[in-house]
Amino acid sequence: MIRDLHVRNLAVVAEASVEFGPGLNVLTGETGAGKSLVVDSLALLAGARASSDLVRRGAGVLTVGGVFEPTGGSWREVLEEAGLEDEDEDRLLIRREISRSGRNRVFVNDRPATVRLLSQLAPSILRIHAQREELELISPELQRRWLDRSALEDGEPLLRRTADLYRDYSEMARRLSRSQAEERLRLERIDLLRFQSDEIDAARPRAGEEEELRRERLLLRHGEAIGEALGGALGLVFDDDGAATERLARSRKLLAGIAEWEPEAGAWVAELDELRIRLEEVARGLRDRADSLEADPARLDAVEERLALLERLFRKYGASGAEVLAHRQAIGEELGDLVADDEEREALAAKMQAALAAYREAALELSAARRTWGDRLESRIRTELEDLAMGKARFAVRLERREQEGSPLVVDGRPIEHSAAGIDVVTFELAANPGEAMEPLARVASGGELSRVYLALQLAARDDGADRPALVFDEVDAGVGGAEAAALGRKLQRLSKAGQILAVTHLPQVASCADVHHKVEKRVAGGRTRMGVRRLDARGRVEEVARMLAGRKVTDLSRSHAEELIAVSGRVRR
Image (cartoon, rainbow, N blue to C red; front, side, top):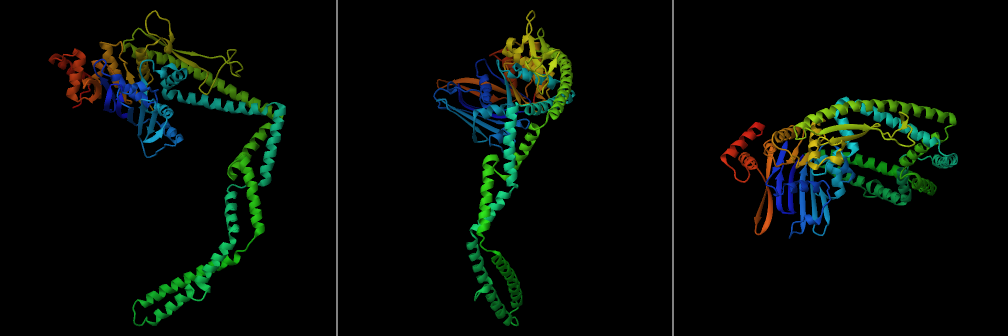
């Protein structure tokens, strides 16, 4: 969800702030007022390419900032990878600065970041649909995801089973390929791995051993200083004339002599007795440690040699004993595969073929299910498009299989490209007008048509918004009017129940459906054009919808019609 947007020095915008709300947010205003600049600002925060031409004339730096509440959990992983994770923060504060010299500066949660990071975060914060920007519909892979999403929970088990079987087969194929490597290279690899394993085994490293040895080396190197300190401390506590224990005894004797007259003397005597006992325990500990301490040059040499051996292993196989042992385990597994005899390789090949057959069966079942899902999605989208001034458009979901030379998966006598997602290449096709041939969506649809098809797809696929970012529609109403405009408003309203929608619109029927209505205004002051954004109250909404209905001259009749339109939409806030 987009919470706030602040823009400074963008084109005709000197400074503007927009506070968005949940549900359907609309931006309206006269033609040329700068409504699309709000969308452009959001695009900059999503990592869009920036140009110094966007900087307002006379200004040095363009600044765009926004507060977002991301969806899903992937954004935290992106932040963690970038070293910007903040587990206590559920919002993202993004700021981007573009100077007239072309320099870009990016900040995420007030920490320096990169434009690339914004692009990685974008799928979790917003999805913009403007003229020719509906990449979600243009990519075949994403079209396949949309088709699969339309199946909802019915398709999840089959999709998961196909992916799991593909991973099983791929692992078998990888192991078999490794075991069937060219013989000379295989033998050379075996010799190398055996040398490495012998070297590690001869050293017999233990996890954490190096730390124990380093601590022991410190003790051995500084044994003389330790012994002097222990002896000195023991003398001061117990052995020397005037030691602490002797002074305590004298203090006790003096206090005991006045116990008959001083009430607290008895308690002090008891405390001194306790101190004496504790000091004697410390003295015993110091003496025992001092007696056990002796110079051992041989042991120091042995520790040094052991550490030198381990450090040689660390330079080759890992930074610690644990990493060396993990490398040894990996060596053992690879050696096991490489030295497998022909019989074992044949058994592995048979397992791989069985895994491939299981995957093929699941992929074909998934493909058949997708045809059913595609038919159902086509019907739903056609129903949605009828209300969006595209009633004569034809929409189709085409499934095909792409040949791949050398592929081990054969279907109908052809080697087929395959993956964890199955064997289907999904293409959305459209004929926007009667008499036109069906063509891939990206090739034939205008920007407005793409926006409407995307909107229809959102509704037809039953997108529940659980992991959906805010959707931004710019000019989704292009070419729509009359009853279709009212239907478009209702569809945006319906879609906004599952997640925030921001729509730039010229249609009063769409604006009347808004939860939050912003008006973009342009004025001339001091010889300069300025743009501002104002959030409308109930009265302001009526005035703006009336303007959209009647034009520049708003009448009582147009206001009445506006009030009725807003009331019918059920969106008047009391």
